[in-house]
Length: 116
Image (cartoon, rainbow, N blue to C red; front, side, top):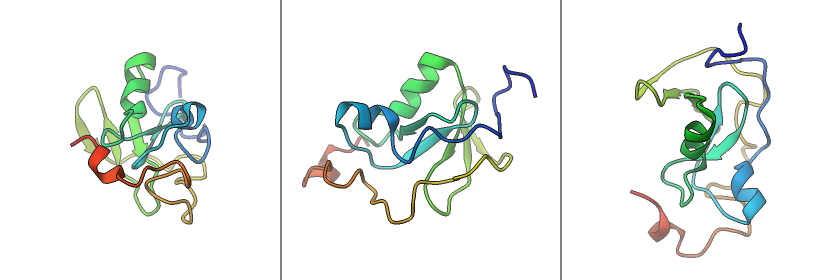
């Protein structure tokens, strides 16, 4: 697979939570993983929408859900959902990690703060 391929299945995720939210003290609703570089970002319902921001900044178009039990992919360029290869483990955040998360950073009125 070339280095410019949209999916690099052997690259592990950047961590167990949104890298950008963790760096800034933010919180997320659900997590998405870049299928090229492994960057874990928050979904578009999350306040900061870091997964989409990562695509815009990096040009990496394909993400996979990083939620337990989900394996769907999304291609930002084609705006289509689909399937893809199994990515390097772990394939989701830990099952005991809360969503929204991270624990202790989610405001009590979190549901009102979601992007709809």
